[in-house]
Image (cartoon, rainbow, N blue to C red; front, side, top):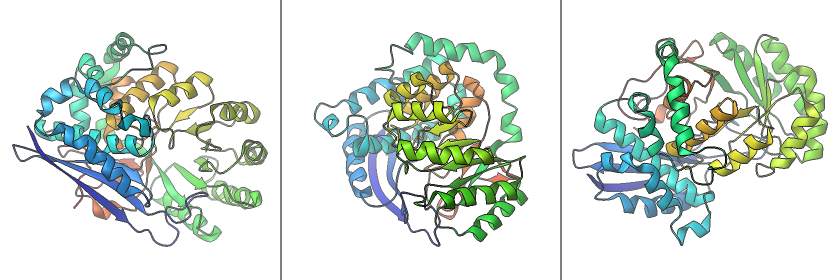
Length: 406
């Protein structure tokens, strides 16, 4: 039984340009942190990510949802969590503040993620194992598939998971080998050219075979110069991704991406406004074969559905601390599997939670184990920080979702 909850506003200052991008020049990595405690003494931690200002508003929204869980049995709750999620996200008055986006949806993510953490801790297993041990029917019962019926029914979702069971044993090999990572910290926006070059060399020495550079400067020549620094330092054998963090208008994106084609980017991420599906479609057609990745600022499954229907996204970067939590993350992953698009999450959680979710995606859904973003800057604050060896995430063994703070 869930006996109490606590909501904490956690903020962590970054130094020396770390975390900067074309839009967020001086972010403060922050979490609305929901703690749920049951009558057996299990304490669970759920996260929603912001970059500072307004984090207190997300905490207030999380409080609204957490209050509804006091007195609920977690096993009973999670057996039909999709129904609770639907009811919570559609509460007649609070819904007006979204719906299904912004502060209220982030608050729901924090509480949802705490529920999954508590469920795993009650069973004494890592979250990835809990999810893999569930039947397809039990997984789908944790999901809200409303507004997706035109492309993914409950029966289709169950069928998709059943179809993938045949190859699970072979895919479980990733639990031993580890899940590949990519270094997203080589080229934060405020880093100078020499630091970018040095970081690329360091990433190679650490075993990474993919890395990302922040672009979106007022002067496109800065982006082009820095992109070529990364390509020349890393060599053609390394995947290099470019991330504009929504900075460009569509005409700017077409012009700059056309120039950036020459250094062969693996993808261009968030090139323009995240709500503008048609602009992304126009851009994808204009700069092919360069591929687009998006999802960091896509707030819910319905917008992801539209992106998938448009065919403009080659990689989906759904983030469980940005959408409505683990439940909606899995929903989007199922959508992507149906449309044949890989999921490479954005990691507002610094990879703590997502290291579990990508294992589930690969083993249970058959998603390619492509790679997972790695951001090391808050490792010292987590009780069980992610472990990376030779560019690979080591499978976590502790019970829960790895989101407890020290």
